[in-house]
Length: 235
Ligand SMILES: [Fe+2]
Ligand SMILES: [Fe+2]
Image 1 (cartoon, protein in one colour):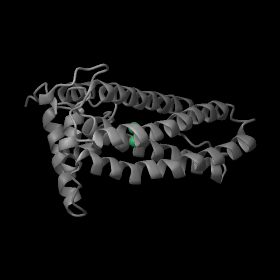
Image 2 (cartoon, rainbow, N blue to C red):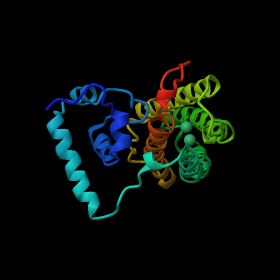
Image 3 (cartoon, protein in one colour):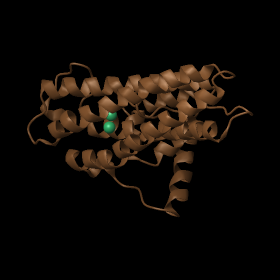
Image 4 (tube, rainbow, N blue to C red):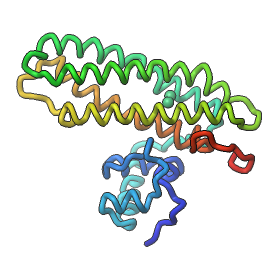
């Protein structure tokens, strides 16, 4: 089986939402890495296309027993923006301060014996600050601009490129956090707050992957490149 080169990871994730679970299981980046051709991403993981479609089918069968998926591609930019704001942005506004507060208590109690916690705190603080300004930028500038009916223009294109760059920066900070924490491995002497933080961080990451997927691969699918020329037929 050959998968056409124009089929990207992000395109597949947007049009077949069950693929998200499969990508997650295979460790394929579907949000910031969404522009990668699917065939290339699978081959990097040593997965044959036939195997991928088998996994996808299994995912569909499993999911049928539970619930139907929302078709985000059918939503208008304003409806999708409102959904993102109400779910993903609200979640971040709750969880970021909670992790920060817990992490400070954990450093106080365990920093002496786990010096890496200071770096975890620094990286998380950077991620928190970056995301907090990012959410406001989207809510006050990007979402209202996309909700307008007019043709896309250079100003929106530049803003979209900035937003996509910030998603990548968040992804890099998460990768650093993985490295420093040994993939959020909980040490034997960890207290409850320590465990809670290391449970919340992967949850935060998982939510961010879905959040950025909706923005990069669906909401901003026409704004791929920095300083792009926006054409009518890309709309
Ligand atoms: Fe967002
Ligand atoms: Fe975003």
